[in-house]
Amino acid sequence: MLGLLKTSLKFKERNYSRVHTSELSKEQKLKVAGALFAGKFVAIALLVGMFGFAHMLFNQHAMADTPYTDHETMLMNTANTIWTLVAAFLVFGMQPGFVLLEVGFARSKEAVNVLLECIFDTCLCGVLFWAFGYAFMFGSGDPSGGDKTILFNGHGLIGSQYFCLLGAPLTYGSTGIPVMAHWIFQFAFADTCSTVTSGAMIGRTGFRGDILYSTGTTGFIYPIIGHWAWGPDGFLAVMGTKDHFMPTLGQGFRDFAGSTVVHTIGGVISLAGSIALGPRLGRKFARDDKERGGMPPPHNLVYAAVGGFILWFGWYGFNPGSTLSAVDMQGIGRVAANTTIAACGGGMSAMFAALWIGPTKGKFDLGFSLNGFLGGLVAITCPCYWVSMGGSLALGLIAGIVVFAGVHFFEWLRIDDPVGAISVHGLAGIWGTISLGLFARGLYSATGPTGMDPDPTHVVKGLFYGGGTDVLKAQIIGNGIIVIGTFVVALVMMKIIRMLPHPWNLRVEEEGELCAGGLDVWEHGIEAYPPQA
Image (cartoon, rainbow, N blue to C red; front, side):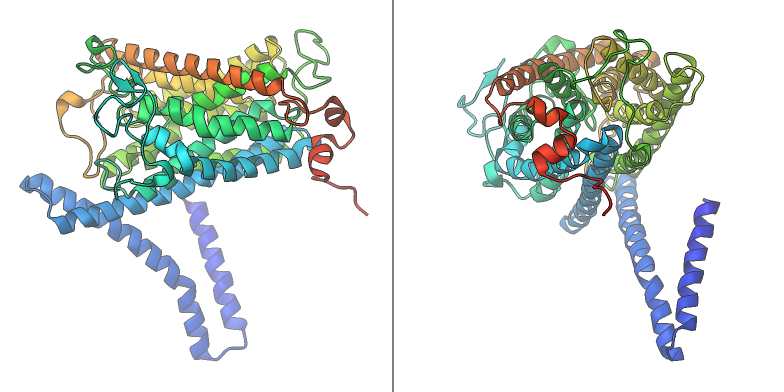
């Protein structure tokens, strides 16, 4: 904080100096100086006012136990919408982080390919998620109230309303959030899943093949399987209740911000793609060549490190934003704190694991440290609302070890994953989802537009806090169904694209992969680092 304050003061001094030394009249100098600070004060006042007003409304009605007036409800919904949109912009801001991280870990001759792939995936995701992805994921499985839908145990497997957002209500469900704002927030999530899928497939995927699998991922796999857990009638979301899937379990599947729905789905699709593609030509694995085998060195760890920090920053929209409620101040603060401490734990445990074990023994490895804190972030994404900071640190420490072990495990299996996406997003996502059944503190229920649900019977309590194994079993069942379903469908999709003739084959032609300029020249006709004239 002291460093930030000093930096801020220096910035102000420079601005004052510029104004003081400029050839302006005294009155003009005062106007310019005032303008330098007006925006800052207005922004701070708006934020303080928004949260302060929401806090006042919540406390007044909590004490008086009276219903909100229409005007108060409108103001709360406005605050919640602003919060949701700010969070959506933060999540979307993770895309530069993904780009830098993947480019940094890739080889220099693949940089342009990674950049354009991420840009195109984002554009494609926006169109598809508007046209039918959002409908598949957040529409009701049977809007007619009859049986005109694909059913599973009496419930829809896929949404069937709001295509192109037509016929959508003004607000989504009981959140009070406009559907358009909810779409923006969820589009940013879908885009994240789409970007995750490319990480393990860098260096040998043809660009036209990328168009095909990205269409399948964003348009169908992610929203349809995501509907099972997050849709209004998804069978995993309503699991454990009367007349629904596994009614005797008494627990539904929970994934607060997407350890499974976003990250595990993305990581599992990456695994399927890596299997279908095979390794990059010339790739030597450690089990085959102990001296020269192993992952090729990243071409720019500076990019990777900066990208990792941008992703960490964006996660403050990913997790706290999933409350969809500015009124739930305690929830937002708890989620943000838990997100931070889990990332710290993951980064530290992965760094020390690499120091003590494996080929980097005796060295402090930057790559594992980066992937370690990302693994901690992925893991905390599911349980972030229901756990304590101590539990968050513990599950983050374990996530770092999971990532470290996973990278070496897939290397042993001869699966080529240039950025560690399968371990960071797939394995850490599985661990984080299951960890809810262990670390849920038993003090928190569910967030809502007016704050946390006060009903003590709705709290989530894990095994380590005396809650038994019911939550744990629900998490294992839900995560297992999604992992298996995603892998089977993704592998079939990847295998089919792999059999197509060039240039639509999943894998680029051999000469394109081996040419001097790599995929950058072969697919895009330009190098990221052209020779100086």
